[in-house]
Image (tube, rainbow over all chains, first blue to last red; front, side, top):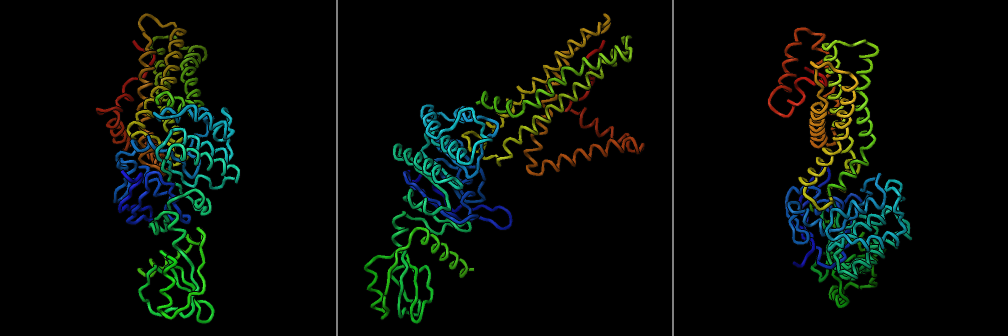
Length: 301
Length: 218
C-alpha cells in the first residue's frame, strides 16, 4: 500500500449549494499533507467523509487499507483526529477525558499521555468545559498523539490559537512524526503554517481538488513572469498558463506553472521579451492556483 | 468501555437520576402517610386503592426517568454534532449497545428507589392478612417501563435529529388534544379509548404499561 488515504470519484451533497464532486485525492504514506482551501471549500466535509462520519453519495475511500465508511472503525483505531472545534465532553475533567479516550484504543500510551499533559501544562482536575481555547487545542492534540496513530488527521488544529500554543502544538506533532514516521493530513487556511511543516499539498476549492503535488513542485513550479510583446494567440507553450493579465503599455503579467529555467528561450522564439521572473511564496501560489481554477471553471460553465 | 460509558452517562445525568430516585423513594411513603393520617384510610378495600395510586405514581416516575435520561443523555453528543462519538473506533451498533447498557444500569437507581420506598410504605401500612404488598414486582415493572421509555425517546431523538423538539411537541399536543376530545366530545370517547388500548394492550413491548400497577393487592 503506497497511500495512507486514497479517494476516488468521491461525491457528496449537503443542501442546495454545497457539493463535493468527483474528488480524487492521494495522501502518500509518511507524507505531511497540507490540505489547503478557503473557508467553505469542503475541507472539513472531506475529512468527515474519510473518517466515516458522513456517508458518501458515490465514489470510494480507502484509509490505511480499510474501506470507509464500511470499515471505518478499523481505520479509526489507527487514526489520531483533531477536529476544528472542541468536541469533548465538557463535564469531564482532563484526567477523566484521558481515561475515557484510552478505553477505546488498544495502543493508548499512558506514559506518553502523561508526558504530554505535563508538557502542555494541563491540570488533571480541570474541567474540559472550562479550558481556554489554547488548552482545549492542546488536550485534543494530546489525545490524538497518545493513541500512537499511524495517521493523524488534523482539521484546523491551530486555528485561533496564540503563537506560543501554536508552536507547542506543532512541535509536539513534528516530534511524534519524526519519531514514528506517521502520515499527517493537516487542513488549514493558514498558508504560511503549512509551508513550514508540509511536504505535500492539496488545494480544495468549491468541493473540487484543484491542485495536488509535492510541496517543492507546488512552490518552485509556479512563477510570475513579466513579458513585453507577448504573443496574442493561444500558441502552445511548454509550461501551463494559470493567468494572463495586461500590464503597462505592451507589457503583460503571466502566472505560469511547471516552469523550468530553460523555458525562457521559448519567448525568444516568439519575439517576446521576458523581463522578469518572480518567485511566488506559498500564499501567492495558493491564491493564483485558486484564481486559475475559478477562471477555468467559469469558462467551462 | 462500558465502565467509561457508564461513568460518562452517570456524570452527565446524575442530577436527574438523583431527583427521580428520591421521588421514587419518597412518593409511596408520602402517599401512604397522607392516606393514613389525613384521609383516614383503614379498610382493606381502601388500602388496595391507595396501593393503586402508589403503583401508578411509581410507573409515571419510572417512565419520566427513562424519557429524561434518554433526552438528556442524547444531548451530550448532539451539542458537538456527534463528532467525538463518531470518531471513536467502534461500530455504531456497538456504540448504541454501550449507550443502551449504561442507561439500563443507571435506570436501576429509580427502580431501586421504588423498591425500597414501597417496601417501607408497605411495612408501615400494617396490611391485614388478606392483602399482600408487591414492592419487588412494582420496582421490576418500573424498571422495564423506564427502559421502554428510554428506548422510545432515544429512538425519537435519533430518528428526528434536529427536529426532535418539534416532533416531541407535536406528539404532546396530539396526546393532549386526544385526551381533551375524549372528554369534551363524548362521540369520540370510545374510538380514542380503543386506539389507546390498541397501542398498549396489543402484543409488543408496550404491554408493560398495561394491566394493574399496584403496590397492594389481594
